[in-house]
Image 1 (cartoon, one colour):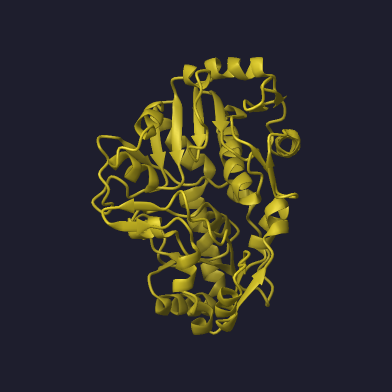
Image 2 (tube, rainbow, N blue to C red):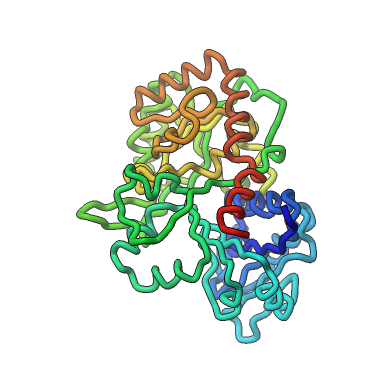
Length: 390
């Protein structure tokens, strides 16, 4: 593959929490390992989040510190820029604004991770902007509903990729209106997660989640409401650990006491998500120390049969930790047997727990094999660039 100059754009400076950061790092490192010259840029009108103070502001300091540290550790030192366009002088950290603008013209492609980068005239000088949608269903419904701005934004991209790998098939009900959506999935650099150490005897199935994120992304379509938050999906399966005969752990914050009690009565335990969200290495260590992951999918992913799969769950697999997750249709493409098991009912969850406990080594080995075959960053990204004509 010929070496290309590629810009990855996203929002890990604006939202420097571990799950977001790892999602971006896998793109950057994966593209580097394919031999490309990779730059990371955020060019934004949005405020930045400081996870230590829980504040949003236009100060570049925390974003710059985070991106500088990551650049040193993951090989893009002197190849990153954060531009805060919301301020009058449009200051940058990392590269200068002039160099950032030059890169827009020079780059062979821009990868718009999670579709998070808003457009401006400077970015649109590049004609090979690749949209990567990590939250399928939302944009397709917006297009079907003719939401203002949606088609023009998507139309500014050279190619549209989606984690909804069943979009455009007979399994996905939303019409596409002649937009061509190409299937992709979260790239994972598996050697950054692999561990030869088995989990301790006291390890449990765990997951990490924002408890309630519904609101602006809840969608009404054809008389039904499709929810963005995972909270109601967890409640549907709250009996899972009790029915499975063991404890599960959730790293999240549930403020409502009655809801907490429902979980506690069903053998859930909670850990604080704050430190593992701030400390990227601790986030990885938390996953590696787990027996495996039990999690649900957002309502919109599951009911629309998108084929979506979690980037965090892919990290569990890469760590050799089996995953039990809610079916979205992904088993039509991979998984569904050892190492990666899907459910629609509480009874299926209990069956999967028993199967994993009966032969943990085999499920652990299979989990890593699924990650290496289907999510390895170099494979996923080589395919993405080839299909985009880059």
